[in-house]
Amino acid sequence: MPAGRAGARRRARAEPERVTGVVPSVAAARPGPRRIAAAELPPRVALLAPNGPAWIAARDAVTVAGEMLVPLNPRLAPPEIAELLARARPHRVLADPALADRLPTGVAWEPVDRVRPAREPLRHEIGATLLFTSGTTGRPKACVRGAACERARAEELIATYAIGPRDVHLVACPLSHSAPGIFLRAARAAGAETVVLPRFSAESFLAAVERHRATLFFLVPTQIERLLALPASVRDRYDLTSVRCAIVAGAPFPPARKRAAIDWLGHGRLWEFYGSTETGTVAVCRPEEHLERPGSVGRPPPDVQIRTIDGELYVRSPAVMDGYLEDEPAVVDGYVTVGDLGRIDGDGYVHLVDRKHDTIITGGVNVYPAEVERALAELPGVRGAVVCGIDDPDWGQIVAAVVCANGSEDELRAQLRARIAPYKIPKRIAFVDAEALPVGSSGKPLRRRARDWFARGARR
Image (cartoon, rainbow, N blue to C red; front, side, top):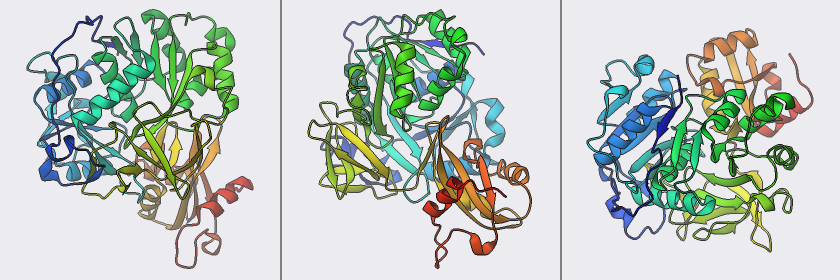
């Protein structure tokens, strides 16, 4: 499938601005995220489709209609999609025909490639989004992001990266994810040209940068690692001189790997930010700061306020979500946290210390261990399982499991494919007797002990 183009060379003239899909009770004062009932939301439209022009046209149609978009990750397994649809309760479902068999039986859907907006959206016309993400309890949480929140995020990106009509924005990450979707909004609002790749592969990505003279792109660290893994002779074939902002986020990016990326790309091009689906951008590390402040994720943008409470980072900004659908966010005095532990040094730089909760970030995608443990528990012959994340130079982290079960690694993985997305399936599995399973007296998983098991080189 060829790359799709959107917003090509839009003029930068001033245009009327409009905000659609606002959550009325929180848009005005925005006192801080809260629990939001479904009845407060605009009509929802679920979108299950891969990257491409049809995805963008569908989002435009939802925005123009004043509805709320519910993007669904095409890599999710059918049971996962069914759960999210049951919670979002969309009044319409748009799907790529090739993915329609993943929808629950009886769900009515419309082919996404037949959807067109009633009119061309205005450049600053930004709609509301309901985006599911991994939460602190293992159950995906639904982030309610009204149009005011979405627009604040786009404006922050435009200001931080000086995005304008001369830019060519290359999309190589799934638009159903938070950061790629908001970068698309920002680029189009700034009048930039956007080129959307259907999928990422390292050399094809470099060829696209050269062919389209891309000036900025967002990648997760795993994708940067894929590029660095190419032979230097292959990387050197492609002209990347058009690039001014190579932006990375979504998972830890060790200083040594940043240095390798800088040595390849050249100084002044690599940016990093730290944020979340709930908060938007929390801190930005500019190109000149990577080597001066190793280990830091940068400083907050002007409109972002951060505080620490018992070592936990809390954030307040216009870009913070409106709240969770039917879930209570962790809020103190209007500041919200997603459970990350960190510190702020004397110069205002943010340093992440650990993750309070056990979320695994593999290739820039969140995986909650409890989800994987539940899926394993459903398999015949599995008597117990503890899932954890272990460090990996390529993926950042990989999903690993210590299990008490019959069968082989391949057999377990084959059975899991029908239950959970491929990226959630453990890449490493250690088999133990029931007595050796790393659980406490109450049966609570002891993930640190599981990580230690793999650190000792556990094998069956």
